[in-house]
Length: 212
Image (cartoon, rainbow, N blue to C red; front, side, top):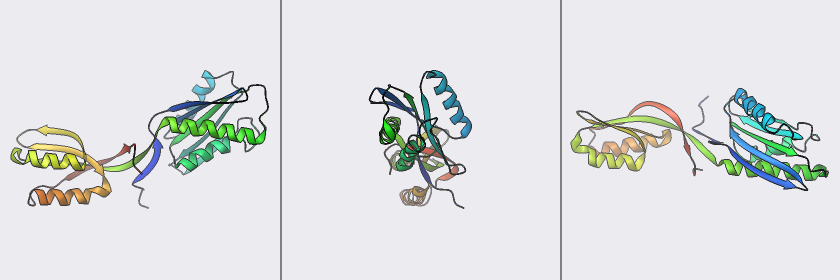
């Protein structure tokens, strides 16, 4: 099966606080590529907030298509599932959201808990800054110095320039979404009268913060 050319995740942690009737809900959203990394986050958070009443979490992983959550002692369906639901609605994967609750002495009821955990999770996700990760081709284009000014400008407008190496020729190393590679090859061929081509040397995932 062909792998997807993109997925949505977060590239850095984000934290937020929600207060409801004196209970504090501390939300943390963080990237996590596997369950070992998730457990490291959970151990750290439980240690940092050892006096908290609950550490509710939800996470989604691409590998194995895993969606899991924990109510951590809260009434069934009032905590972990709302957190996971916020992740699912955001379309995020390889992502963990933990909401730590400091009980304020007032019972919130089923609806209140669902609202509070959802609000804390949603705010933490927004703070983390979701990004679209696209599968990008890593390429190299070598050219004589006489063509570098024009071709270099063309490449800079079509792809992300990773490095430029100056030897007896100029070699530009670049990356761009794989689906954009045919268009780059076409424009490169036209601009160089068929003399130049982009040689694919590998691929990598690149974050596009404002991509859809």
